[in-house]
Image (cartoon, rainbow, N blue to C red; front, side, top):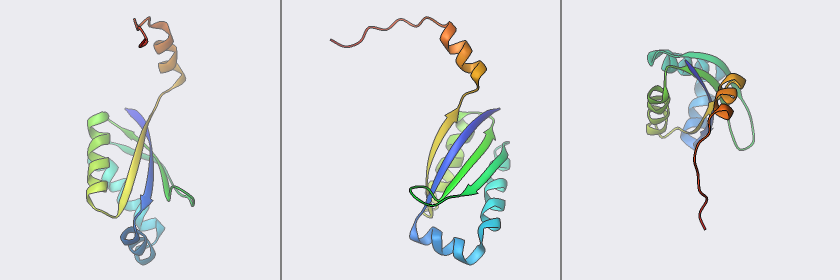
Length: 105
């Protein structure tokens, strides 16, 4: 499974739902969402500033990550930003490769 860092920002509607249901209910809803695509919720934190929630999830693949993002975004209550996380070993593999590239100009 691959790890993803997901940032969530609530709309006004989403904040109203959070005020009504509380933080634990949101974490439970996200856990259920992630498990419904075969994943596992590793961490869920609330934050303030640009992002309202920060989540780390193990998901089977990019399609599952996209399904989570699309489902949440379609609700209109939260906008998300998803960042794939790479292990140091994956970076080791990347630096061993020799891609061919010619910059523009």
